[in-house]
Length: 180
Image (cartoon, rainbow, N blue to C red; front, side, top):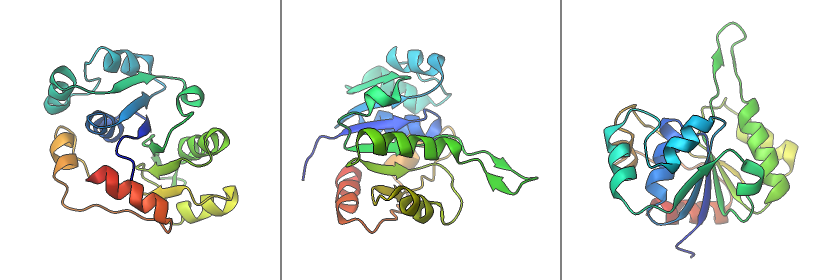
């Protein structure tokens, strides 16, 4: 199994940023965000969110990590794409806004149909099965993160559980290799 992946992380909040920083120790990682401020901070090795351990990793570790706002170009050649975009819940409509998650999935499938797409965003039950069927792909899997603000590094490095939802043997092998 390949040991060094090209990973694109879309959404640089607590989940995306912690994944990007920690995976960049052993992989080529490109962080994508719509906020130029977050991108600039990450490229300057400054954490755009308040988290002492993430700040330390950015300042002290040798990371293969860059960031920008151009998903279409950055995703080319990616083995693995993490989707950690916001999915705000509308209480009145009883609905998660999954538009950003689906937009990323569509773009990735268009540019790199063989990439493994891992959703870390909060999504409604049945979304993965629905999107796989509608977009005719088995590349999409769900692997939620259980991170707390301010301790994302600890929670990522020492999780109390890892959930990987897939029927794809290839996707499962990639996830196991990455989490090693």
